[in-house]
Image (cartoon, rainbow, N blue to C red; front, side, top):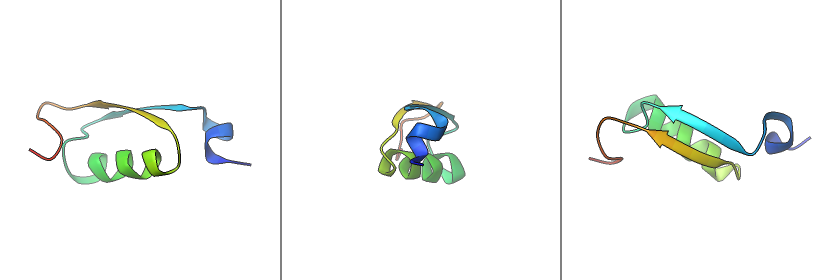
Length: 45
């Protein structure tokens, strides 16, 4: 079973500007999920 089939096509990531949140959002995007990022700062800022 594909990851997206099991968990759905969308992921909402809070704390995505750095650290684990940023790494997790990149990982999910590489797996083909649509990712919504929530961060106080811009990604990579």
